[in-house]
Length: 93
Image 1: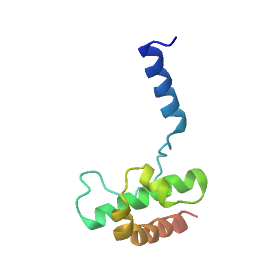
Image 2: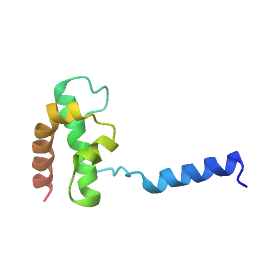
Image 3: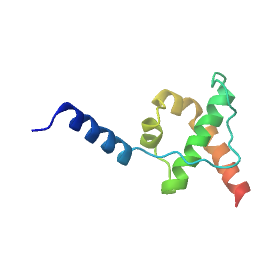
């Protein structure tokens, strides 16, 4: 029978094994500080898109939702963020 400490340890190991790691990339689009303006939100979303694309080469809405973005934010800022992320990627190549 498992005790509480074993269950917590297994849950932590499962979470670590299944969450999307964040890669540190040079040339981040977002600035440090609060993400409280539309431009800051677009840049932060674009950074998340670049992180995900670096791991699996494509970005789905579900990937961004797993990162904490809402469907409303994706509707409002998704296209602009994708444009920023693609432009940054093309400059790097």
